[in-house]
Amino acid sequence: MNNNRSRLISLIAAAALLTGCSGLNQSSSSEKSETTTASTTTVENTTESASAESASEAATEAAKVEIGAPEKADINIGYLNSTAHLLAFVAQEEGYFKEEGLNVTLTQFSSASELINGIESDKLDVAFIGSVPTLTFQSQGHEVSIFGGAMTNGHGYVIKSEFADKDEAGVEVLKGRNVASVKNSVQDAELQILLKNANIEIGEGDDKVNIVYFDSQKDAYAALLNSSIDAASVYSPYASLAKSQGYKVVYYCAHEKALENQPCCRQVAKTAALSSTPNTFIAIERAFIKAYHFTQSDHDKTIKDVKKYIDIEEDFIDTEVYGGYSVSSPDPDKKGTLTLKDTIIDLGYTNDYDIEPHYNTDIYKKALDSILAESSDDIYKSLEDHFNEFE
Image (cartoon, rainbow, N blue to C red; front, top):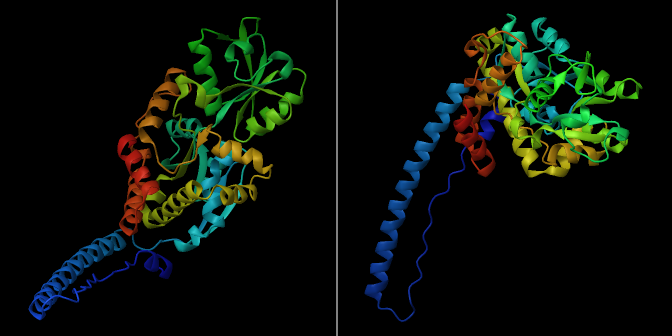
């Protein structure tokens, strides 16, 4: 166990002190009686305090033994050009990885395929990957597992202003349009869900929506400069960028009933690595949990931390992170992801498969339990409540 971890989980014990003030006009026998009572109470309180301290220390020691020291200290984490992955940024900038005995390198990638290749080639230990590509990779036999979350919601579509006179007009405005999307992405799955619910077919024609696929979100958004593309999918922070450049928002997934609490990016690692080096991943998860706590308590510094990795105006970061369009949480949200899995199978994205060997919630639970054993407040308690409901 490293020194920082030991320092964090040490308890501050306070002996109960009781002071008695006798009335100046009371008799000496009364003073003696009160003094005796005070002394007895002090002994009892001290004994209770010692017992409570002993029990707390035992619980903390059990947590220390359970999580152990990281088996591997040098960690590589991959992310996309998105504010969605802020847990890693904050954990790095606020020193939470170091507190957990980790030396972390963060590297930006362009697509989910690049990230999964990084995991499988051992260039990455952890990657923030969209839920839909992760599920399809698993169904195709890739030995990778989800062990935590990154963001819920945060996607949508934007369109050139000549085709919409207001924001959030809905998918009806996409009829007869060529729209850019990314195949095997949560943005594309969400669009197909909304089109299906609105009885709008995919294809060419005035009453249909023609989807044109690109390799990455960056490429899909850049396609708006092409005269043949009318609208494009977005994830954070592209919606804010688009609005600043005069485009209109077709929809935010957070505002669509059919897409409520849609799990976006997940924390992904090799399945075997989660089993062989569990303490390392518990340490990583502890850092992410601490980072989440920081994002909920220091908005201004969080925005500055994110800007070091996603170089856009701070106002845009504020909108994307705190504007109500997304939630960046480390919770694995297994229940929500399983629902999404059933949805993309229904859409024909992939065939059904057994996800249980590829969904590890034990890492997160042990990390959260160990932090709660050290200290607890409303923010950490909310994570515990959410996990218990959606695990």
